Image 1 (cartoon, rainbow, N blue to C red):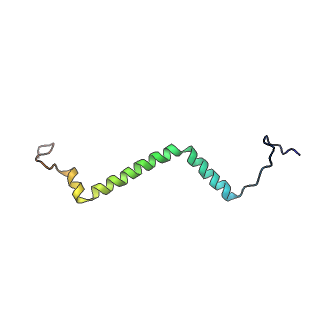
Image 2: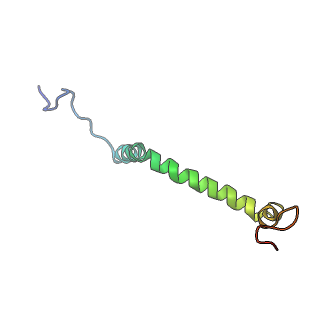
Length: 73
C-alpha cells in the first residue's frame, strides 16, 4: 500500500518536544557562525573587563612606568 511519500516509509508522528528540539538544532546549524561570533566578543569583553577592574592591572593602562606619557604630563 503506497504511503504517498517518495521514500515509501510511513511518516511517524513526532511529539511536540521532539519537534522543538529539532527546530532548535536546525536554528543552531543555520546560525552557527553568528553564534560563535557573538560568543567570541562576549568572552573577550568579560576577560578585558575583569583585567581592567583590578587595580594592579589598571595601572598598566593608566600610567607609564618610566616617565612622561604621550601628552607630556
